[in-house]
Image 1: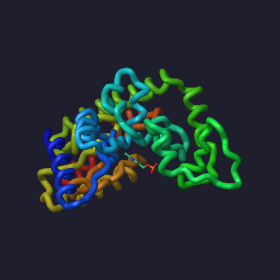
Image 2: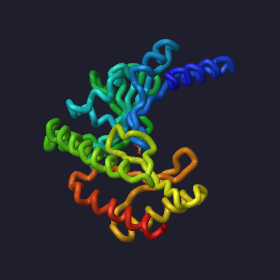
Image 3: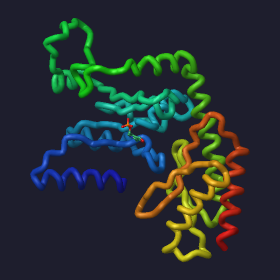
Image 4: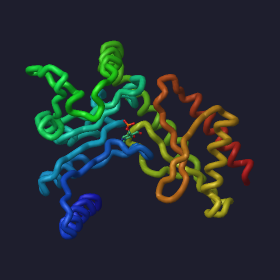
Length: 263
Ligand SMILES: Cc1ncc(COP(=O)(O)O)c(C=O)c1O
């Protein structure tokens, strides 16, 4: 509800300043914390103000392959356009990224520039004419082969297993009072940080930076260190299909050892 009124306020403020808002972009899920915007609500606002509704599902679009998790994307079916990157949660080698349009004619009407040296093709859209890049790799071949090889049920299994491990990981964060979560994870990204009460708050960013280096040095584990709400956080992406609970246990043993050493 808060988000709804914030978006409405942003649109109306822009209109009052003589600006012309034309699009609302929702994210599923966000890069730092892996959260999913309320797509149904945001779509309703886009409709109310007659704006284009885009969903950046570069990361989370893969959930559509899991019957157990796809309801998290409810509302995405109303999008006018969707970003989706199979190079993320579909494990396709990069680059493999796309934008999907509900109505292809909006794209062709706006962008199509015919090249005089290309023959017109009936019933076939030359993507080179409606995007920035003319000549391109056949990136879709990797996607087609992966879908063919892994299949919907294979992807569902991979996605559901990473949810199971995310829950496991999150439980271990919650069990430690000197750690805090940035948000409740909704995908396979866990964003958390140390808030050790024995260290002055002004030094928590440094403590987390040191922990990140310690985990890499001592455990060969890489957590990224994004800035979020003005502070450094640790971000685990539980994407590797070879990840096991045992590796997560080892990571938290190192976290505990580091914390102990700083008391
Ligand atoms: C939500 C989201 N959108 C877009 C991107 C960028 O995608 P690309 O590398 O295709 O520009 C990322 C990459 O991390 C992302 O997480």
